[in-house]
Image (cartoon, rainbow, N blue to C red):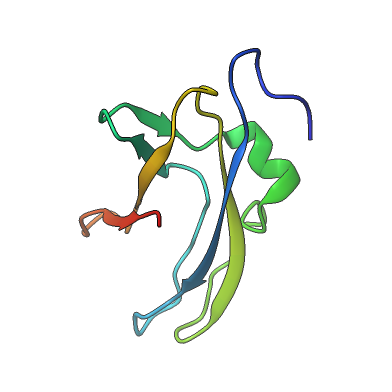
Length: 100
């Protein structure tokens, strides 16, 4: 992976994704959004996904299957991320998870 932009840092969010539906579905680390304590938002970095994410191979995930993945985000050095929202699909609201 390449260096972060000046004044920023890489934050690699490790996730375990599971298809809980009854039909095959697609997962991508793209389109996820992280937030800092002030409410500023930071989108996942699509170019960085090519290097750290397992989801760059678009293939359906069968029902009940789970897999680890990494969501790369590049916030400013001075920020601390407090939560991330995961895109749940066209008909679903995003799922928000707090960092501990």
